[in-house]
Length: 71
Image (spheres, rainbow, N blue to C red):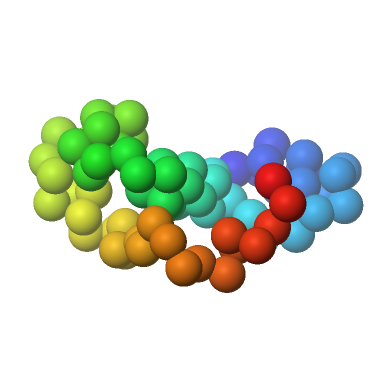
């Protein structure tokens, strides 16, 4: 965690970004891309689907504000 904080500071980024934030972003991006919840479960390393569903919110694949971004 300290290494992450140091890296974020060196890159002049928000030091409150944590490994958990990155995991959540990764999982959310997978869901927004249409990856099914079981695949997300496997990639996150959760033994139970309820663990994955417990902290990942439902993400609509279409109609999201970030759809207008150029990437």
